[in-house]
Amino acid sequence: MMECPECHSTHIRKNGKRRGKQNYICAECNRQFLDDYTVRGYSDEVKRDCLKMSVNGMGFRAIERVKGVHHTTVIHWLKQVGENLPDSYAPEQIPEVGELDELETFVGAKKTRSGSRQQ
Ligand SMILES: [Zn+2]
Image (tube, rainbow, N blue to C red; front, side, top):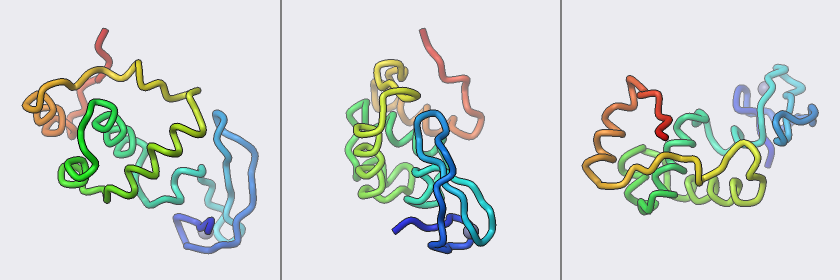
């Protein structure tokens, strides 16, 4: 089940913890990775965006359409977040995205990445 995101070897060893998450190292290519990355090759940023949308009431199918991340993956992430944290991830601290057109602006601006923290 555990698989290297780089070479897809299943020869994986535990390699301590990083910020409360299990860190792994691949015995074949020495690539280090956290538990999350085994789900798929998505970056933390994509994952965070998806979770943000979900927290703000967006449906999994809608997220799938917008982000191109399969809805079962998003659901998997949500479960992970629910189980593992909250340490580095606190939904209450995520800025509200609110209205749909605001969300579209948000998604459209993802390349430039507005320094997303709102008070
Ligand atoms: Zn590897």
